[in-house]
Image 1: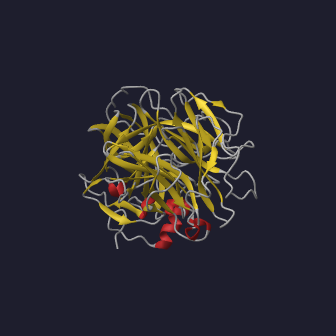
Image 2: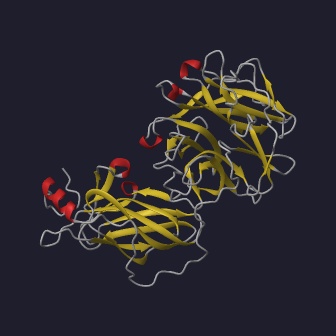
Image 3: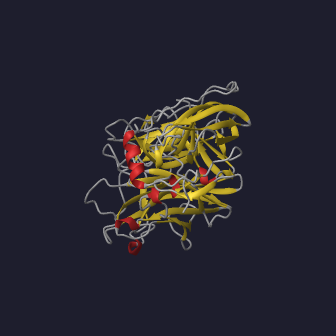
Length: 471
């Protein structure tokens, strides 16, 4: 058994409980003790959580840029419309269309209950525009994907085909269509809706005709739910290719609350295998609770030629509606980064010298780094900043140190950023396997940075660090 702090002292459970009861819980905010001057910021601090760009219920957004120069956004049913539609010249200022762009659904759709049309996808098919939508199939009772066509992006779209486009009833149905094109072939991405009936949820890739109205080959499975944070399901796939790698964005969890989140996976080939990221891309927590349940994402190139991610999230303490957000999106080393969003880096995946990775109760990823006991012990993180300037570094730690008299005692780590001393991070007593966060300001360059934590006074373990905008 590994003793967490590495001091060699045994920790009796009763003694731990008594000591913990005598000590106040650690505060979640912190100051760094300066040890030499830190470099001045090279630019303004990065933006924090975004404000809604369309402050009305506009869930599961899909965005396409048309020949008219406008961005056309579509969303799940609300305000009496099967599919909502809005336009913008800059992805920030939006004009809402009062019309329903899908006034009539396919004959295969049950209208009991009415108005349940979800997660639209619209694309230019070369001869007009195709809208894919999710609705409930009257024959099998499952949600399925249908297609509709229009000459213009503003509709009205008219259903095509005698039945749904994709409807695997035995797998729970199909929802959340999106598309991807490569080498003249269009592919449909969709989710098998297995969470309806205690089955796996898989994200699929399947070739379709140019207008997306018929499938032309078998579906290939890409990823399924297999991470604790996904809470039993994955959905809402979005596929892009950046810097020679395929990046699959997806949503996971219960869309009805703050537990909904956005994940990512990458592959070197279109059909995979896809490797998931070690942490979600966006969560309620990564947006500091300012955006609830971020998901239903789409990626579009903005008017400046840079990528944007558009997504929905709950706004306000009542969490009563999912509104539209937009943020800058950067791809580096094959993974996505969202400007203003806090990014988590697990300690066990960092560069570790004269320290030990151990299984750790309640740690993120169930592992942490302990035995940071020697003067040359360190944990070094390679972190990415979308913007240069002042950031907040949040260090998730545990400290069960005792002083010479056996009383709870604080601990510290020395902090360096890009080889320059950035002070000392101090950790109040928490007890072992009781994880708390301490926040310190750091100045980062745009791009990659090296953050190192080295043994200071007494002992502390590291679970993860998180990098985000200055608070």
